[in-house]
Image 1 (cartoon, rainbow over the protein chains, first blue to last red):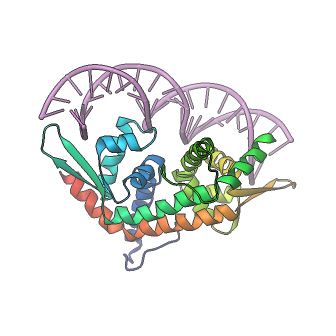
Image 2 (tube, rainbow over the protein chains, first blue to last red; image 1 turned 90 degrees about the vertical axis):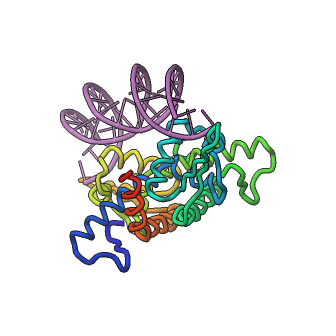
Image 3 (tube, each protein chain N blue to C red; image 1 turned 60 degrees about the horizontal axis):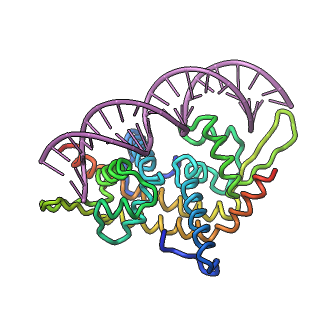
Length: 128
Length: 128
DNA sequence: CGGCATCCCCCGCGATACTG
DNA sequence: CAGTATCGCGGGGGATGCCG
């Protein structure tokens, strides 16, 4: 990652450094378990807060709120509030969010494809 | 992820549940910032412990050790000890590790492709 | 129902020091 | 140089309660 530049970006070294630190920050935001699971859960659906809470195995109210805020701030999910009573808040992936989602899909597929290999490897490791 | 099954896998519901909980565990292991950065750093090179420490921006000795152990346990990296003095320990990605790496690459590309979009989105969000 | 705030506890993580 | 162990702190994150 450190050695990568994005085409059409800034050429001033200072801008490059800024971009890189931003990139690392974004990566830290996004490359965490809960964020990725939320993105995967959303898929191309539109879900309510409570549906997400029930759908994402083991996530707490607080973590869900926090991660949704973060994802919204970074423009990966869109949040729409319906001014009804009781309130109804819906979340959906934006364009960039959906783009990221496809790579999360690949990660999930990878996980399932390698379940057996990993299980064996773990057993070998733990038995020593 | 919850609704996915891998082809050729177990058909017994109990096995499916076991596989799913294992999958979640693996995903939790792997979907974390340091693990992904280490994998990205390794690429298809073979690196020493100290090279990794210097290469992965901001990682501590302890975190590096911990994550390398975890990755080794899951069979994503191979660890080879050269019985010299001073000791020389080298790490390299295994087949599954390299497979995962390609999706991490995509995530990094995604990050850089969306830097501008995210920066704008953040500004809008923070200014409110 | 969804969100924010508060409290509090636990452990993640860094710093340091010691072995082979 | 690589790894393990120990200690100590700060903050992550759970539980709870109160608003709109």
